[in-house]
Amino acid sequence: MKKKQQKLNQNTAEPPKAHLYEKPCMLTYTGKVINPLKLSVEDVCIEDIAHALSNMCRYNGHVSKFYSVAEHCIIMAATDEFPGWAPWKLLHDASEAYLPDVCAGYKDWLGDFEEIEEHVLRVIADAFSMPYLEGEILREVKVGDRLMIHWESKALMPDSSIFEQFAPTKDSPQVKIELLGLTPWQAEQLYLKAFYHMYRPIEEGEPNA
Image (cartoon, rainbow, N blue to C red; front, side):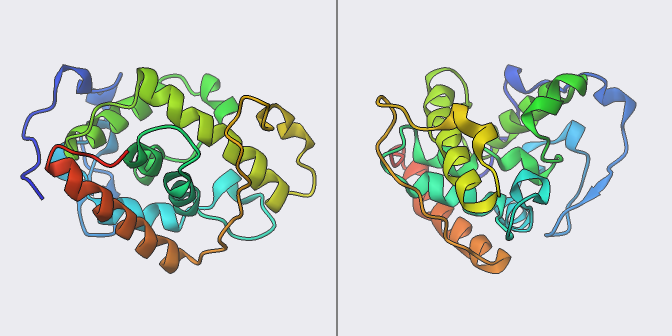
C-alpha cells in the first residue's frame, strides 16, 4: 500500500471536547494504543477494523442468531444491484471499530456523538486515500443500507413490522438478500479479502465501482 497521508485535511479537525480527553483510552486488536477522539491516520488499520466489526453483532445483539456488522458490510459491497461505490459500501460502518454501535434513534440524545462519528469516518477516509462519505456517495450507500434493514429484520427478528419503512418500493433495486451466517472468523477473513481486492485499484487511481 502507499504510505498513509501524514496530514489530515481541513475536514478532519478534532471533534467537540476532544481536548478534554487527552490520554489514549483504547487498545486495538493489533496492539495500537489510541484515543478515538484524537484518531489519526496512523491509528487506522484495516486489520483492526475487520476484526472489530466481525465480532460486533448488529442491532445491539437483539437477533435470533449472531450476525456481525462485518457480514452486513460484506453483503452490501458484494450486491451489485445496490448503488454506490463498493469500497464505501464495505467501509461505511468502519467507525464502529473505534466507537460504540449506537442505534440511529439514540444518537439525537447523545450530544456530540454524530460529530465524533463523522470525525472518525473522515480520518478513515484519509487513511485509505478515499473521498469522504458525503453528498451523492452517501446517498447511494444509504439506499442499500436501508434495504438491508428490511431483509435483516425479516431473517433475524420475530416481528419485522416496525421496519416497514425500509421495505423495497417499485423504485428500489430489485434484489432479495440472503444472509450468509458467517462466524466472526469467516467474516473477518472475507472482509479483509474484499478490502484488498478493492484497495489495489484505489491505489492505482482506478477504484472498483
